[in-house]
Amino acid sequence: MYSSSTRKQIILRSSDMGCDDFGALFSKMFGNLYSDSPPPPKNIIIGGVYGRHDGVSFRRMHYRGDFSVAFPAPLDEITFVIPTAGKIIFNHATESVGIAHVGLAIDKADVRSVRFVDNHAQHGVSINRGLLTERLSTLLGKPILKKVVFEPVVDLQASAFQSIRALVELATGAEFDLLMNTGSLMPSRLREMLIDAVLEAWPHNFTQALQRPAPLIAPRHVKLAVEYIQEHPDSLVSGTELASMTNVSLRALQDGFRHFVGTSIVAYQRQVRLERAYDVLAQGISPSVTDVALQYGFSNVGRFCQYFQSAYGVSPAEVRKGLRSQHAG
Image (tube, rainbow, N blue to C red; front, side, top):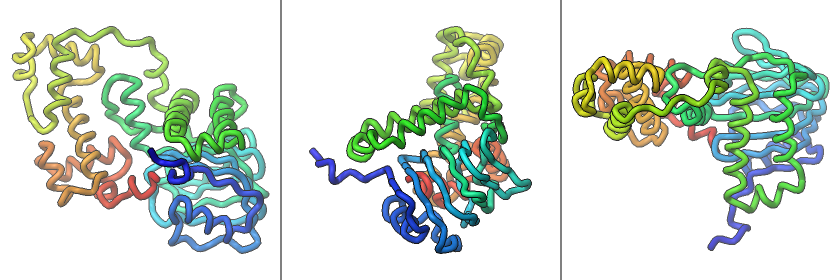
């Protein structure tokens, strides 16, 4: 039985610290994610609460003074910003400006720098893209074949966004510190609640699918085929062979997949293989991207990279180099 003192703290609480002191404390707790970025001016004051656990961060912060932060490398995460004062400006293909009542969903893979203006303050959540895709797949009961794209600019006066703000306030409240910093179950549950709150409240290209009634129960032959594909991701079994295994015609199995899984047999197989390839690459144990592609039946490595980028918004090479793991802690 471990004592609570051995658990890694996940919440940083700052009462108006100089940026150097805040940066040192942040690095001590979470690692220096911005070690290659130029430091802000020394007169900048940072205050608030920041928490980070397994690929999800949450914050209620304020910044005294105007300054910019350059991102040293693309981050495989989406950040959701609910401004409460001042401005925040993200620089990518076009500028995204967040002010009171205007919220932003920013794919950090596309962002090069951010500027805090007019004593900016915010509530915010950042979530690893893979976690969003994985949870969405679970909620919909099928693989996610397209990149999840969130509405980049929203009107925060809509009531739906109050759930995210309320959850951030709960997580960053002083009464939660003991549970968050010394427990093990509560941080994981909070992480799940934040992911679910964002998927439910913030509009994205799968919102309508989430709001549909629960699908009908899939027939036995579809379940058997899905189970086989899940259990044998490196087996390039044909639709005809799957139909034979499940004792139905190929046409019946194809219709079953379209109706109950929402995609074709081939597309489902591809996504399962991509998911397994992502897991192997993220673990950093594979000799090369080519080896992983071939292991999961992608003989054309270039096409594998295209499928992967489309599904996850990041290249196989970047995942293998630690893009996900580096910023998940």
